[in-house]
Length: 196
Image 1 (cartoon, rainbow, N blue to C red):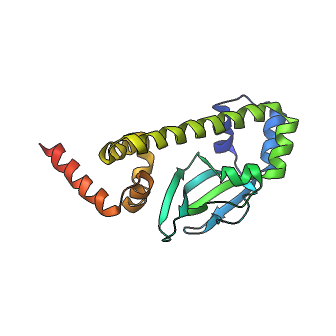
Image 2 (cartoon, one colour):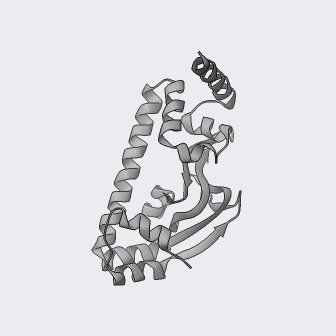
Image 3 (cartoon, rainbow, N blue to C red):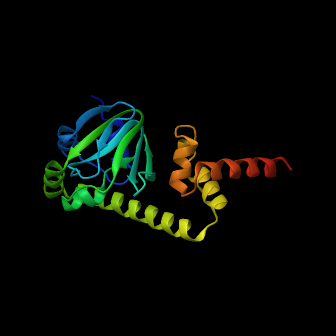
């Protein structure tokens, strides 16, 4: 199994010595995730954190009417888990499933703990990952509360161009907090505005 993608991801934030890289890759489990298959269901405990080698996944919760509300869309070179469940060993509040056929590398929670205890460089790496995720979610919450829907959509297009062709308009609508019908009407308005 080739680990170039995940090692490149880590190398963006920290420098690994050969023995650290070997220890890390020896703990990874490769998994193929067919489209629509779940990595996690609400109520289960998230016992691993996953790096997306290829493919696309979504994390979402179901509201009281069983409507899917997307929390995260993730593609190649991104990490995904239910952080609350993974960190606290509590039942997950969200579902994680594949939008397209995907391959992931998974690090089990007990191996994660051993890795951090044995190699401080991974403490730094995962701290940076968590900080970046927290910042991303904080900005998203503020934008969803303060920005008009059209601005949220344009912001999504500009921030995540790699997602636009790989996820459905319905999924984008859920992610930015509007109905698919509203998004469709908004896209028409934007298209007409760009023509003038």
